[in-house]
Structures are given as C-alpha cells and as structure tokens.
Length: 197
Image (tube, rainbow, N blue to C red; front, side, top):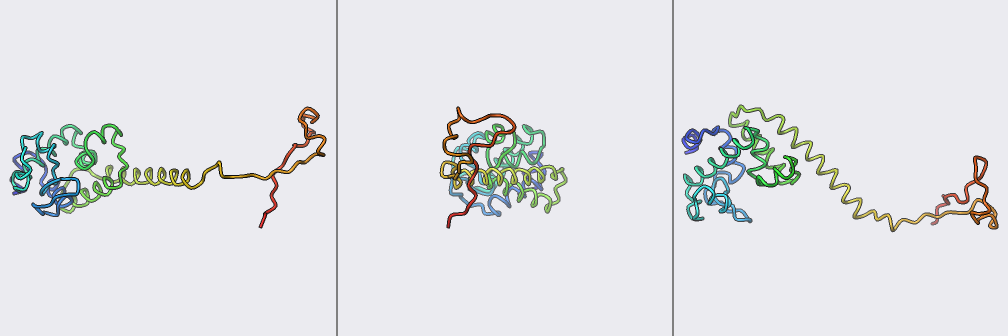
C-alpha cells in the first residue's frame, strides 16, 4: 500500500517507509504509551485534523497510511521540504519545533530524527539530509552541555563551599580604617591553603 499512498499524496515513498519503520516497525496494531495508534503512530487529535475521528479506524492500515502521509505532506509544505524539521515536527509536534526555532533537544526526538533519516537513506531517499544529521549531533551536544550545567548546579551548591582565610597583618591592623591602601600595601587576608585531614 505504501507506494500507492505515497504517490497519491506526492510524498517520497522512502520517507513514508522510514516513518512507518521507525514508528511501528510495520505493526498496524501498535499503540504507544501516550496513545499514538497504528502504522504511523498517529495521535487521535492529529488524525481528527484530517477527518478521522474514530480511534478504531486508525488501526486500518490504509486509513492510517493515508492520514499519516497527508500529515507528512502538510509538514513538508510548512517547512519547505526541510526533512530534518519535518521529522522533528512529526515526533515532537509543530509547536515544539516552532517555539524552539527547530532547536529541539528532547533525546527521544533527536534519536528518532536520526533513526528516520538512516531508514530513509536505506530505502533510497534522495533528499539532502546531511545538514539535518549535523544539526541532530549539534543539538545532542547542546543537550549534554545543558545537562552538565544542571548536574553541576544540582550537586555543586556554592553556598556549601567554605573558604578558610587567615589574616596577613597584625590583629591590631585588621581594622580597614587603619590599613594602608596603595601599591605597597599588603592584603588584609589570604586563603589558608593548608589541608585539614
């Protein structure tokens, strides 16, 4: 059915096959934990946008393929055939792609985009996808950097740090008013670098 459906809607067959393989591995009865249904793992509200209001209908392979391929066609138009953005939007939703200016850092979406592009190429897809793969790798790095920052913030609380200082001057000169300022003056305190065991 895929070649016929893809041809009818003007979507590259390799893209439809790649999405089906990544979404359900060709299992027409697949249901995700979040309620996506069938070969192309359509969410019922998305299917309703295309006139399919019965969840039971989404288990019909032809209805599911037609609806999912129509959705791909709309995304291809919206994102000017940018396969990376189309694939991200198919997985994470258009709102996320638009809000983040295509900088989606969800690990699931990054892995999904890479998997679909790999399958697309295996099925003979010819659209340029290297830029999308490069973007996925870059976003994965951004995601890891952000994660590292969050971990540091979580586990390295600056308020828990304590520094030991020792006076460098005679105690009577510790009053800042009595301390000479200028290039020849000594600091009032210095870090105590002795290690306490």
